[in-house]
Length: 165
Image 1 (spheres, rainbow, N blue to C red):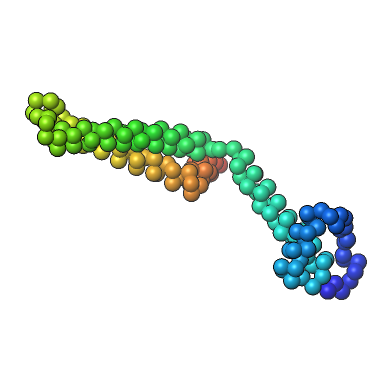
Image 2 (tube, rainbow, N blue to C red; image 1 turned 45 degrees about the vertical axis):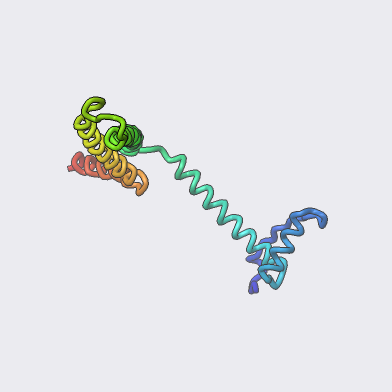
């Protein structure tokens, strides 16, 4: 397999026969059908190092500092999402009270509750819910797609170009 043995490094490891690790390795070697034990070790080493590098990349990405626009979007998303949940809950409660007043036969709607006011509040609640929901959707998409970080970069690039001119 190797034409020049001077290009080869040996990496050794000892594993006791009675350990679970030895059994797992033998099962892996058998399952994958390697021709030699060295091939199996190289395969596991490659797979393990790839997984390690992927994990390190993920940690670096998580540790990256947020830009001002990302922080703004994150704050607005939380605010708008909370407003959407609150307005949705209030609107649902108004729908339920309206339904109880209109469809419950023992209650005279004209005497007990002003149904037109409830209907108006339901309309306002739906509008507020949609406004908060659209704001949460837009900021959530900006954060999820990574455009929030790029907006800051675009602003920084254009301000640097203006100062250079």
